[in-house]
Image 1 (cartoon, rainbow, N blue to C red):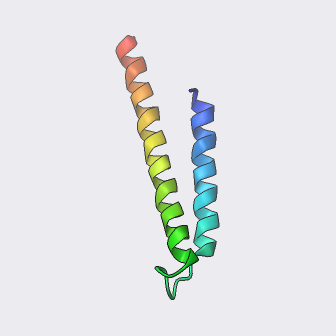
Image 2: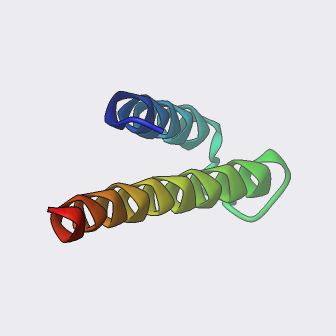
Length: 66
């Protein structure tokens, strides 16, 4: 997986976060569709963290092979 693909995935995850924030009812965040939106936000944040860890591990791997 190359760097541009990872960046595209991070951007898509950010777009999903932005979309899910619009679905959250801030008066009742744990009722109905707001719960699904909050789960989507957390899942997107997890995807971003995983991609950042992956990119960091690739950088470390390159330095070790040098």
